[in-house]
Image (tube, rainbow, N blue to C red):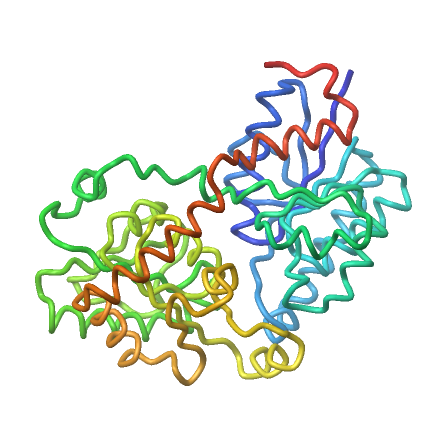
Length: 376
């Protein structure tokens, strides 16, 4: 029996989840052929890539990359129809993936949507559209299930794949040694984001924050975790240590962090590290976001907590001075610091007992009709 899965992951975080899922699929069904849209981590797990991830963000940014996105969609559509997988697995990236799902639906190919589009933030009308196309949703947060209940679409909270990368049993000192840091000196992490546009917008801000920290707390090690293939848009001073492909480890051994809004805020929360969240985006995207979204907060930590657990500094408030002041407060005000940590522990408890990638692999097999032949 030939088994085929197509995975469509449009961005860096989704590509990581696609790689983890691919690994679990191959554990359960070693003969499975996986192909789709992804990046180097999916390729390393044996996925045949038909196109790379687009890694763009926001309305203005999408316009600049529109031709490339259209080319990728054409390749994806042709591969879908020519190879006819047993199941199409979509990972976030809603506009692209919903359009691809329509093609799969018309061709009679079942669809699992893993990582729900943020229907609770953007265009809630998408819920009915998604429910009319896909076979099942596998969501990362418990509150997301409620958005799909009324549609009758099967939806399961599977937990967040980030939890699979965190090893909190290692002491901070040992983690620092592993990263090449001084084990007896505190660490502050500054995370500019993972996408090129984010890094370009945030580089000067975090370098200024680092300079302020170094001036006031010269013994603190300032670390900027980044993905391989990325770089700050400005040359950082020598006291900033850039560490690649170890974001989880860096935030886990840090006393405080300044984090560009995104998945990394949840990663930092699950590590129990107090943080300040900041973000700058193009004025057009920010303006449209204010009109189209109904969110009070941008940080996942605050959305999950339904209140401001960590400080958010956005657009004109995302300045080096304000970020530094919040980090300084976290480092020096123990009551404030402990209050944040207590709230972050509640986020950790939401994700306990979940094995997202393994469970999503099982769901994939269920929908594709393979689970009567699971290889353990």
